[in-house]
Length: 353
Image (tube, rainbow, N blue to C red):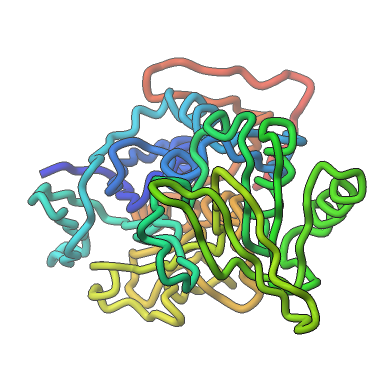
């Protein structure tokens, strides 16, 4: 039986940052993740995808963000159960929980934090009759290594941040980038939309709006796609290409977590965001993209905030008879479990009492 103070389900960015916030409170963490390495989607799906909304980083690759988070939490000696999926939740008489994985590994903790991002997921695939024939033969649903597309012709479909960001990023790598969206308006960040349109004006992106990829052609590998336009007077567009990458998001599934008795709304876990991000089960919290509440923003930044707030309340659950006085790290520094310490600068003396 693995015992810890806080058991974290999900080792993505939010789960990893929870280790840091808990470590500041001298709380030990252990993480469970079905993937074989920490980092969640940032490591498994798009490690080379640029992220633009992390404070102090105008641009950082998803994989690099994970590496920096792992470096940040190294002093707090987190434990990991990787390559295993959390299956069952059992509450013991003393109020603690036991979580057992699909491989039978048992974990006990007074606090369980679900930070599983979107849960288990699979890409949303466009309704093209023969698309499965070309999977891994020119059709890809995610980009792990942009170098695969160097000097190649690429067609990207989608109207969200992933489609926009990758289309922009690949303009410096691919021989030709075409971006196809069925509407005139995009759902992504305004800055990305403007950048994509500017690149289209100078010919670095071939932009097709009010259009959809409806046909795929090629003998053994993908050689071309056909676009149909919503404007009926326009003839279909034939595009030669090496790769077709539909980026329509992921279809999230909570998996076994959906059987834990949690209050679920639209495949997300409802929490008390006015206080502590606790679920309807006392002692079980949910943070990051896996939770929902009025005004929820599915951003890594939001998950970091939720982790910080949640840890303060988790401390009270674990230590009901102790009063914790929060200090800025600029006051107390960062004391690791290994005895290492990053000292605070002496001129900063603020404290929250």
